[in-house]
View 1 (cartoon, protein in one colour):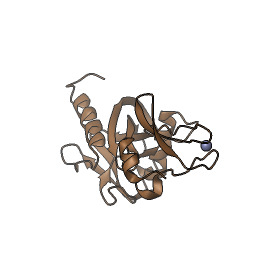
View 2: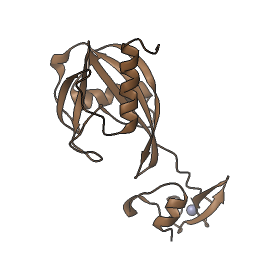
View 3: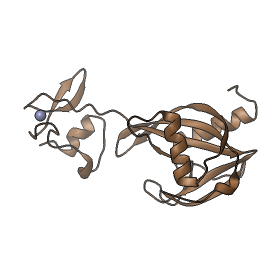
Length: 188
Ligand SMILES: [Zn+2]
């Protein structure tokens, strides 16, 4: 039976409830083995290898002129903190579609203008080991659409230079990249 320490050797510190103990394909107990240079959970019964890959997260810097739209998080991690709207991509969904969906679900915003990719960031995660964060700058056309939805307690507009620090380093870096580009310090 794989222990928490075994999962730490695989590069992931997950809660007991998140760790696979049995093969999801045949039900056999998993064991640890070195596969392609890394320790990975494998199934001694059917040879299934549990590759632990970081899930992709999308986030939006939704802006109207010099103001940005943030949500007060209603879920862990960092519940109660102001953060960029965003969430996990679903299978079969393009990154931008996922970002627009999350923006609409959390803030109500559906009418959008200019859209640009800000960049891709790395974020350590206790539950997943790490996640990949993809950020888009999305111009808001109709601020009157704003209403807090899924995973958001409140939605608020913040002036640049008077905004809270993001609860995740990747979000903070994403926001700074956007701010620097708005200031013409780095090109898009
Ligand atoms: Zn198996």
